[in-house]
Length: 565
Image (tube, rainbow, N blue to C red; front, side, top):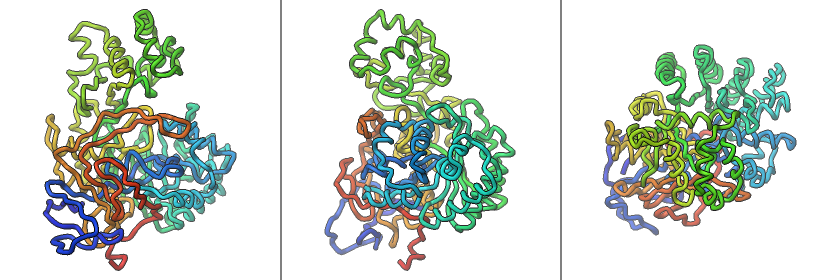
């Protein structure tokens, strides 16, 4: 048993009564239900603090795929996007914002959400009315808040007036007092709406941000999460320091190795260390593997998607698309075509074949650059696009290629290891529920165990106990959920029983189970013997039991000794 605090594993019985752990050690009494965990590892359930299930949790009782991969608590509302507060006339604005920033089909969001809320408090009530398999906590997204207060002016990035700033301040104060876990914002040029516009919060003025931080100070609670490209490093990092000073509350920001600025992460860590030394409660959220795209005919990205001939067949059913692409004449025409202008990201893939990889059996998330499509093509003396073309047609068009877009500038994960093991970072950024047509990083907690603690051959492994700690009690504490993430008396009975030797991720695959039949990438894992949420077994060997003990977590939660346990 790993207690979630980073301690060495011990052999112990765990007794549960109701939703709590009541005894750890030698338990003589027989339970109504017992799980034999001999030869297995037992851990707290994963506490995933960076997800985007804001829409899904209003219509779906199962928070998949996070709940099928060992998570027992997820935090939504990240990156400043979400669906409350909202006026009826602004619903489509928030859908287009979420669709653009997080690649969640707008049609599914429009069809799936009941919109039986306007205020953030009403949104929380709507989430609470639907039982879930795991716990969910929600945060106030800056984009929705700004549009709610300012209307079209907010969506169009007009400067907020002093009165509007004070409205946002008061609204956030009341939302946190009612149970919102915190506030989130995005300030990066990379986040766009589905129409290609900057987000409503792009580089919001300092006065607005300080007023919002004041709302957290008024509420005496909450956490703040920020995304920034840090192009204006001095100004942006000073703003984060000032926001924590004004709010008196913790702040986290997303940290990756950006391909365009491969050394920026080092400067950010240096500034972070200085801020922490000065007493600022700031941490960086990091991902334990490349931010990687799954390129495929079923997805939203691959190198041919902006070619004129492919655009003509883009909306055809997969089988028909594959049949057309198997025609040698079509193949020759498509490969010879130049991409159309207006697709800068997709067109950048054409020059990135040295960073695109075939998936042979399992996904290798730390692939050797010598095995890239570009390297294979050079060795064989062929056009790399011919290799990509064949790969896209594999498995009747259901296959994917892997493109490690960020966190992989040097062709290995050594820099990621440095980020992960830094004392001021958090293991996060799974983006569960988001980027459903191209990215499937929701399996990060499982990957942390398999790759970093068992399988990595290209560098040192990480300690298993510390890795478990990093995605249980450490993430829980970072967002003020002190009642979980630890296996000890008084804590929530959120537990994974894992066959560590057998633990293995499958290759991501596409399903069409969102409202309107919209697509999303899914990923399974072998080796989760049981996942227990609040004392109920919710999954056995990857299969749902039908139990739905999850609830909406309203605000910060005290540690057991603070609750009289």
